[in-house]
Image (cartoon, rainbow, N blue to C red):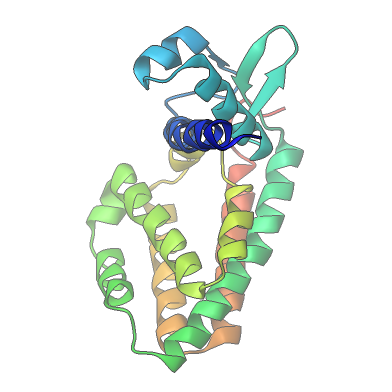
Length: 224
């Protein structure tokens, strides 16, 4: 590959990464539903990107398991079965438990991160109990923050494969106030274990938390 061709390919890949990130956000937040076809013309206009960039973005998302590429039918958001979700949460339980353990080890070695203590205060607030959207908006950053705190980039990359494509809002609607209260208490206990540097306890609590979420996810309507 010549230098100018390499530069051109690098530019396409960078643009495709950005486009894939935006489409990923729309899938995970439920704006693009499971089974929904991704219309190239609409996305090219919305993002906006060239067809070559969009198709590169599709390849990225397909590799992440978020979309399916169908011969002569284009791309669509991947549908998940109950078995798919069970496997997904089994993997998340292992990986997020490991992340919590690593985060606790790092917390013991360094000063406690301010964001973690601030997150603890949020989960004591009634807003995350009374408002399902507030619950989600604080849930995702906490889990992502703990994974980032683990300091293992390969772990972060692995967890991206086990996102909850298109079902996050449906899952959220399964949680009534009592369920959100249980989730909040679990988050606080996980944070306390990480701040105290108790890696085994942090892993145990995180695994139990993710396992419970997986059990609730089986109740999402419309799964095959």
